[in-house]
Length: 81
Ligand SMILES: [Zn+2]
Image 1: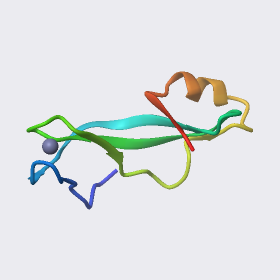
Image 2: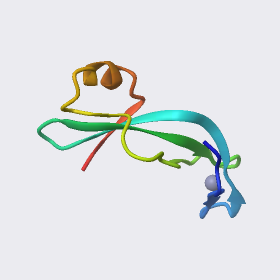
Image 3: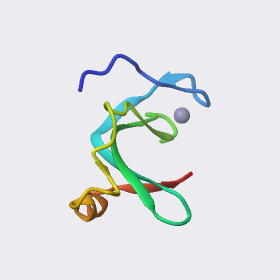
């Protein structure tokens, strides 16, 4: 995916660098996982702060899909909403 942004670290006033594409995040409630999305992991070259941004158009998979467990297993982290 082409990137039209470059985050800046607010703590160190430097441009962050893209550390990894296709960084997968599970968005979940307390009750269950809802969807898996793919973003880009960026990090600060000075302090190492990290953010995940650059989501594509929609989720890779929703909980109602039959192969959702496969996508859950591929996730790098979880975010509880
Ligand atoms: Zn920083």
